[in-house]
Length: 540
Image (cartoon, rainbow, N blue to C red; front, side, top):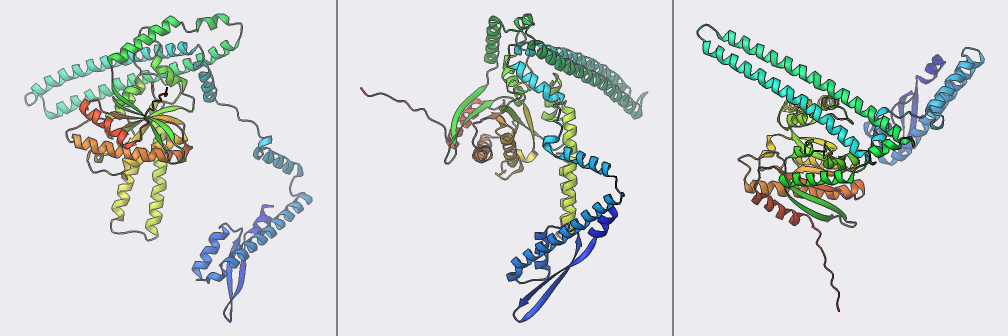
């Protein structure tokens, strides 16, 4: 049957089209190989361009070409079907095997006959956790998470102490060797000792890394199994004693809330809040906040009060599997790792407690690396096609090298951490609304619309730390640029998501002065349309 299909389908045919230009009768002959892989409209456009055909035959030629391809294809299908029937009649094809193959294909491609997909473990756990965190068992879950956090913190403390002792001991050894340098020891001896010290540090760090990885994996498995078991036990009406045990005690809750209040009073941040309305026809209300705070404070698991109940984590847990997620923007370089800067600090925060819901940060970075490598391959192939087609100039090789280099690398109060790649150019005062960092913010806000992220924290000055060149005029210009661009992006968001109320938090570094903070606070309502209160009085 396959031989018949090849004989009938893989053959060339000629498409003949006759037309008149004035008194001349012209004929267009085009050889076609069936089955025709190219779209008929694309083929028609190529014929018009290649043969410089007059425009008045364009529509008729397209209809004739499409009709010819359709008719000849149907003839091939008919021949193929006749050959298949002949093969069945002659016994060349087993009838029962053919029927089984058809039934299997129909069942696999038709929804009503397809087997329902079994929910994965992650989906089951997400549903169960969502149910439990919205029940009286929420305090029990948070207490267990806190206990696991304390356990990992103690392990990290032991690691840091051991590493510190090793470095101190190695420092003493190196100091002694340096004193003997040029006397009884040479540079080679110093280099050899430095290599030994480095190897010892690597061995110790790898040992602790493996131990932490194993501990977090065990914690995650224990936690998820315990959550599933608790959910099953609570479904059993006979476990009334268990229900009583997990009920939140009001007195404990009040005590925890008061402790939380004292903590936030001690660590008071500068903060201003605004309510705005954006939109041309249908206006949408949004909440804006200006804060002087460290971006990573939103990620850290704080050891704050005696009962272990983390009330500031409760809201995050309640909205974890919901359509009201929280995100923040971290400014990083274009290397996909966690070895330096705020990436290292963020990775350290992530490693301080076990993530019971998502893969470890190292695993997520590996996935990002694979995606970037694939994107780089696609871009390089497109650049090569562009280069081969003749679209090149004197600097094309340098641009290709730069493109390859650039494409190679690129928690408690939040659910999503966006990594926005920036360079030292953001420290200059001449960036515009078309700068990659600004356009990256636009892309982030677009992702927020498509993935139910209703709260986003943005570094207002596009830096996490202040430096000498960041003067008051520099800060005012940068803040004005970001305010205006974000306002424009938020107005675009109405067309992306239909106008959903969101909260945007603008964060400035903790080292900024109060005077500068309040200058920025005064600027915000001048750029955004801030809602004003209306007082109604009755006339007597």
